[in-house]
Structures are given as structure tokens and as C-alpha cells.
Image (cartoon, rainbow, N blue to C red; front, side):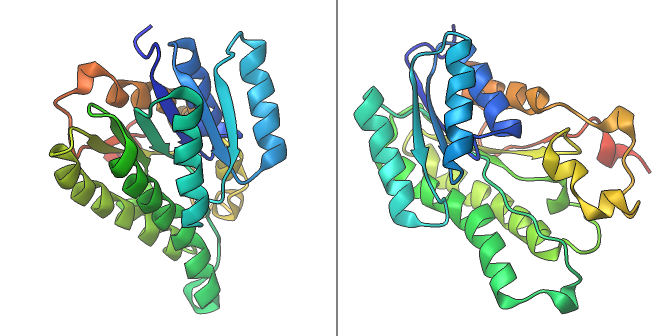
Length: 245
């Protein structure tokens, strides 16, 4: 078990990629901290993990856009398990509006979750994380190529890659690795509830739709000792979607 005794915080952990990641790391011996704004979803996720025999699970209702709640989650993880080794910044918010219909509040909402949440967790991880730790930011292929009606989401995910670069440089001196994953189309409610997909604006080849576990596997690699020389990387996990002309 390559993560035996290590502690991981996963944001947006009540379902989708977050829950798949929790299950992956629990199976590899990690102490699991599930963080999400959805308390009901957190309780269900914890129950699912316990059904598989995972006992070292702590939940934290956390609005990642609120710095104090992030700091409390970091403190709680260390109080419960004695250490912090891995943070997965997975929480995300996506809205669908034409640019001329978007409001100031729309931008603040998306940026505060998709970008500031990762910044807050990075900040407090830098202050409290064990040397040898790893931070993995879940960006999106929308950071590179995008579709109409998701301007604030695409901008936030592109900025998250910039934060990854900066944090990787500053984290190196602390012995903390910071990397990013860019998922493509993943079989989650966020994909199928996307009005661009429903309207056919964003074409989805069913052969290019991945599973949450595909992203969890990539996260596991980046967090592991096998990736100890991987710093500031931006790993596409998209089934080759961006490679098609």
C-alpha cells in the first residue's frame, strides 16, 4: 500500500472525480479527508468508503471560497491524523451563459471556487504540509481549448495552470511538488448536464469519455514516490481528445 499512513485532503469529494479519488487512495492505505460544501453528499461518501472497509475517514464541510473554512479543514486534517501529505484541489463550479449575459457575480462565484479555493489550500498546505508532500490541481482541457458560453470557467481553469506553475517553483524549496491534471470529457453529472453537450454545440465522442477512476489513477501517480521528479507538470488525461484535428 503505497500511501499507507499518509493523509490526503480531497475537495469536491462528495461525488465524481473526488469520490473516485478517495476510494483509490483509501484502497492504498491513506487517511482520507473528504471536503465539500455538500454535507449530505459528504456523509454518503463517507458511508460508501466505510462499506469498503475504510475506517480512517474524516469529513469537513468546507466552502473552498472561504479562507477560514479552508484553514479549518487543514487544521482538522492534521488534528485527526497527525500529518498532511497530499491535497487534491478538485472542487469546481461551471456556469453556462453568453458573455454579454454574464454578471460580475457570475465571475466572482466561479473564480472564488475554481481558482481561489486552490490558492487557499495551497497557501495553508505550504504552511503545514510535511516535506515530500504533493498538491494536485484539477484543471480542464477548457484551459487550452474551449467552447462558447463557459468563458469564466475556462479563464479560471487557465489561471489555475498559472497558479500551478508559480506554486511549483515556490514549493520546490519546501520539498512540496505541485502539478496539474487537465481532464477531458469524464462521465460525471457536470458533463451530461452541460447545456452545450445537450445542444450539440460541444460534440462528445463516446469513445473519448473517460471514467472518474481514470483521473483518480493519474492523481495517484502524481502523488506517489514514482513521480518524485515531476514538478510543475500539466498532464492531459483526455483520451486523446485534444489531439484530434
